[in-house]
Image (cartoon, rainbow, N blue to C red):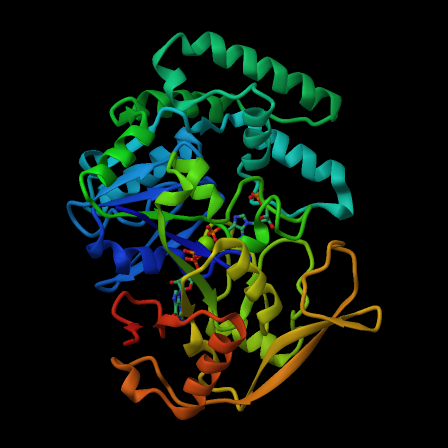
Length: 421
Ligand code: GDP
Ligand code: IMO
Ligand code: MG
């Protein structure tokens, strides 16, 4: 069997959590392959709302196995809070969750280093989620990291060595902090983690495939935040693209099956960095309000703007997307005119490629479409779609060369329409 991969094509928050939940009945195993608690994946069903950060979005559709893969960075304290809050809502995830021993740990001092690095950058800060993601991945790559499996063996000593290194760095950055209380809770959370099955997840996942079981890999963040192909340096510290599913789970490239690429019918971005189609007008405000565009983790306002097909086509290319999924088109239901960016003008030259320099002044070139001006949130079949909506979809399909197979017209699980062939 092959592994299907679901990932974001923009700057994150496309609606990955919702769609993973919707697709879960068709799979036996859901596996998160990168990122950490910088993610906030929202699911809504039966009038309830849940936000997942490190735990895969397949845990609500009873009986399916979920894995936190080796490519993830895990903060035991935030994980414990997440698991306990799910338990309080009636979801005991212990039987259906496994964690890779090779996933790296986020230490309290990683969070401090994240804050210290941001402070040192001043106006050039990235606007991270402050969850210690960058410093934890830095330690992984520089071969100083602590892994989940380490908690089972001589952990206090290893922790002490890592902490001492971090303290020296924080001192050099002249950063003052107090982690006494957090550290105590973090250590308790490390003990809590031991009741979960910590495994060599690459064997487990490949075992599922050999047995003919279906596996869905869940990405976090989005392609434009990828450490290689995103708008560097305003990116996260992991491989958010399809290749990240191979390294983050231990699956071979020839095992990749469908690649589901998710995008919003417009664009949002949290934190700093280029955003060519960003709007500062009433339309941007409307997107922010109707789309409730506030970070699910940090509560920060998300920047909003028109759909950027230059970026989308780039993301389709990098990931080998085979099916597109369009989210949140209901947010545009009241607009008379809808724009999509098809080219950039940079220094007077037209291009349909994303520029190398994140400091370039990019002027978006737009194609305009008449809005569908219809409340679509109650629709249940594509036969009900307004003509203008179909025209919008067709344009996106033609531009990217990939079919839009699913559209989402509201936050609820039910507000999802799968299009026929
Ligand atoms: P993720 O990080 O990709 O999982 O996305 P987030 O959960 O951070 O952000 C998506 C937000 O949009 C959440 O609040 C969802 O409940 C909401 N959402 C998802 N799909 C739709 C949709 O089709 N329409 C509307 N209006 N909201 C949606
Ligand atoms: P999900 O999975 C949106 C952004 C941060 C910041 C940059 C680097 O919910 O889509 P980091 O803390 O990772 O070092 O921050 O990346 N960012 C996200 N933006 N959705 C996310 O995750 C994000 N995870 C990180 O805002 O600009
Ligand atoms: Mg999110």
